[in-house]
Length: 215
Image (cartoon, rainbow, N blue to C red; front, side, top):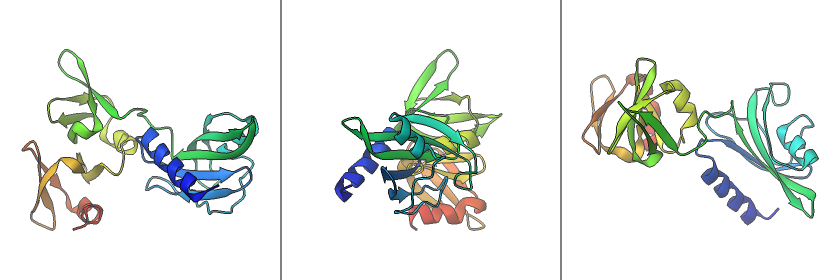
């Protein structure tokens, strides 16, 4: 498979799936490309043969898209995979597989929150931060706010890692909404968001936060 085609496929997959996923691309026998995510790494290497019990193998055999949760017997860790075969005149020539530790909770690029009397869908790019409150998640956006039914840990897995960063036990921020980063006591930071709100970065997450933002 042409390297330019592999690159194009990976870009399309990243656009289709808002949740960060590992990506495997194969021909009809072997993997030719693999990109792990921070969530899960199946330790696939280009040139590895497709394992008979894998999601990729099944999609090639039945010649259609499949979604399955697999246990640890195949790659040593459990995973949820979505595989789409590439067919030519009905013959499988390859396969594209997206991999997560488990089925993502969110299938869209929106967080739908509950307010006093309605629900409001908020696109990811409009979110300022998320805060854990009473086993739910308070979502603060530029022009709306409300509560999401999933807790912060559940949402963390389902949010795109290039946009959202855990900075505190109780907070996840949209890095595109950060206006300023101020040093605070004990190697921590205080974030001033573009809407004027302030979010702490705890010592536990400070080093990881600095690496991700490159400062």
